[in-house]
Image 1 (cartoon, rainbow, N blue to C red):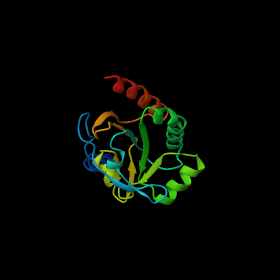
Image 2: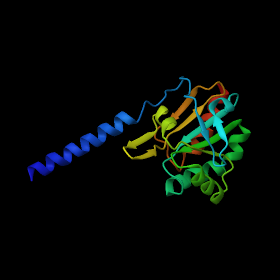
Image 3: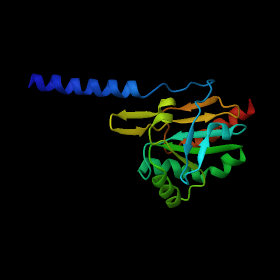
Image 4: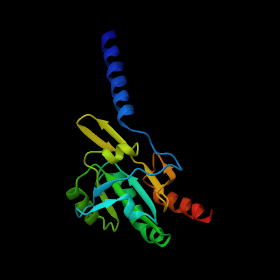
Length: 177
C-alpha cells in the first residue's frame, strides 16, 4: 500500500512540473503584448499589429462548445456593441482548429474573431496553456491590450460569467486616466 501512495504522489508531482514548465509566463501590466499571427474561423490571418490604435480584449478559452466557453463567448457577443462603441475589439483564442471555430461562431452568432492556435504557441507566450504532452488546452485568461500594444489589464484566471463585464468596467476606468 505504501508503494501505491508513493507512485501516486510521484505522478502528481511530475504532472504538476510538466504543467508549470509548459505554461509560460503570464505577461504583466505595462509589458508589450506578445505578437501573433493566427487564422480566424474563416481562415483569414490576424496579427496583433492589425489591432494597433484600438483596445483589444484578447481572451483565451479551453475548447469550443464547452459550457464555460459558450457562456464566456455569448457574454462577449452580448456586450460586443458596448465594447465596440468604446473602441475595443474582442478576439477569442483556443487550440481548436479553424473548422471548429467556424461552427462555434455560426452556432452562437459570434461577430468577433476566433483565432486557431492549434500548436498552442501563442497561448504559451501569454502563459495561457495547459500542455499535457499530446493534449493541450488554453487556460481561461484574458488580456486587455491598450492601443499602443501594451498589456493594460490581466484576468488570470478569467471568470466565464463575468469576464466581459469586468473588461467593460476596467476599460471605462482606463480610458478616464
